[in-house]
Image (tube, rainbow, N blue to C red; front, side, top):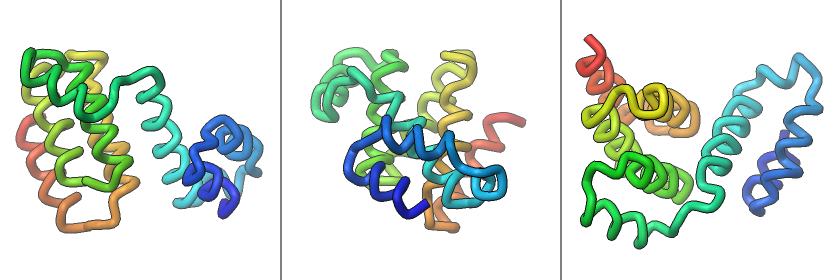
Length: 133
């Protein structure tokens, strides 16, 4: 699992994915493996995506560009700006729950696995739940 984390840190997503896929069943359900899988999935969502500044410009010009909002959230999440990332995903949920099969909600749930701030996760879960019910 340390090798997988190192591969992801170095930007070697393909090698990390191969290592994750090859884990024995007892390690595949480990919290670190789940975290690595979530990080890998987010990294895949950015393939071919513009940079953060371009995404911000696109959103300023078209606030209804849900793909750009999601990609901006992912960029912020992977850069460690967790609060801004979660706000992007919440905004996507507020704007269009049906976009890409409820991608905003799904992204929030996956992001919770990556964030080590229990207060931020708890506050965001409450906001998410308020939108669902």
